[in-house]
Length: 316
Image (cartoon, rainbow, N blue to C red; front, side):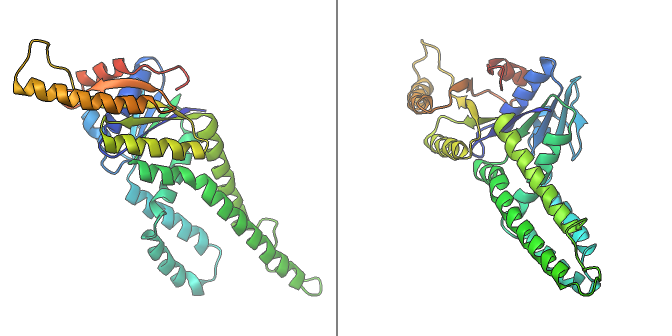
C-alpha cells in the first residue's frame, strides 16, 4: 500500500509549492509518486505549467510522477448522485421526488464537501498503484474537519446500522403464517452499504494513523504560528502523526556591507522572523526545513532548488 504524506497549513503559506517540491524529490529518488490537490485554488497546475484533471495524469519531464486536481464541487455532485441512485433502487416510486428534494438540500449542507472529498481520499489511498501519495490539502480548518470524519461518521454509521437491524427485526417478527417477511437482514442492500462505508472509514482511520504523516507548512508570522500550534494540538488529539514543520518564505539577509534603508528594513524583518522561528522550534514536531523567499514562483529550476533543501527522515 502507498505511503501517504499530507501537506497542510494556513491558506497562502505555500503548501502547494512545498508539496510539489517534496513530490519532485521523491520521484527523482525513484519512487512512483502521485500528487493530489484538494485545494480549490488548484495551484499544482501552475507549479508544473500543465493542466490536470480528476484522473492521474503524467507530469511532463518525469518518469514516475502523476498528478490529480480534485474539483470539490464536482465531487459533491457525484457523491450525491451516487447516493440518490442507491436510494432510488431501494424505495418506492412514490418517494423518489422527496429523495430528489433532500439531495438538493444536502448539496448546500455544511460538511457535504468534506464527506464527498473524504470518499475520494479513501479511494486514492486504497486503490492507487503508486509508492506514495502526496496530498496538497485545503487550508487547515477544512483539512481538520476532513480528517475528523472517520471518528464522527463511524459512530453515526454504527447507530444507523443498529436502527436498520431493529427495523428488520420488527419486519421479521411481523411475518404471519410462515410468510416471508418484507425485509430480512440477509442480503439487505442498505445494511450492506452501511457496513461497507463503516469498513472504509475504519480503513481510513488505520491508514492515517499507521501509514500516513502530516507536514505543516508555516510562515514566520504570528498568525501562521498560532494556527500551526492549534493544528498540531488538533491532530495530536486525533492520534494523527505530525512529522514536522516547514518554515517557508523566510527573508534573505542582505550583504554585510549593505547599509541603506532597504537593508535596514530586511534586518529588522529578519529579527522579527527569528522570534517567530524560536516559537516554532518550541513545538513538539521539529522544524524539518527553512526555506527562503525566492525572487519568483517556485517552479522549474526553483522547484529543484527548494526540493534539495527538504531534508526528511526516511519515514516521511
